[in-house]
Length: 193
Image 1: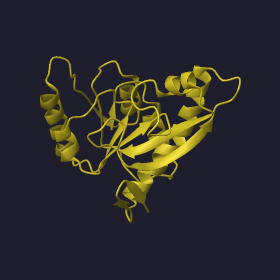
Image 2: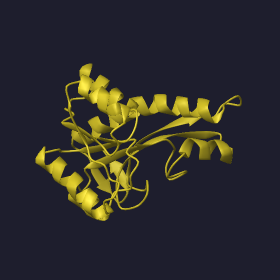
Image 3: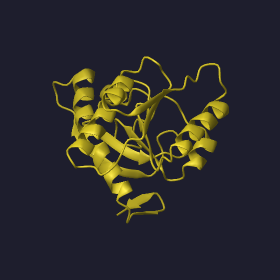
């Protein structure tokens, strides 16, 4: 699992594993930031943690080291949970259809940073969360699961973001289970199970 921040989606995955909703093991949690709160969550769960600072390194060099660390631990599925880096084409090619990301919008709407704020400022009535495969585009890989969140009249950008996060915590473990469970295929861009 790759993180950069507080690790709330990491915790939702650990909780799903703990209560039997997700048959998986988190092998390692890697962060590009030493101060990422999610590292402590992983340590408390007895999971190996690594800090791999990206500063001062070329993207390709950093991503090659990241891929090497994951391959050395025989990681089957790479899950991004608030990892605030765009991955290089070489990294994506090293894990074909084996990198998942969670994004706080109904993609393809509002890719990139601050998707919840983008949706709020745009005035949409429905937004949500998406789990998708990572490809070479920004938040553009095939969609595994989505769930809508209605924008309420009294919402603020912060309250909307909080409700989307609640959905993310349900959606991500379910999507990981879908992918790890096998029996799926991609038909063009469509994830079919």
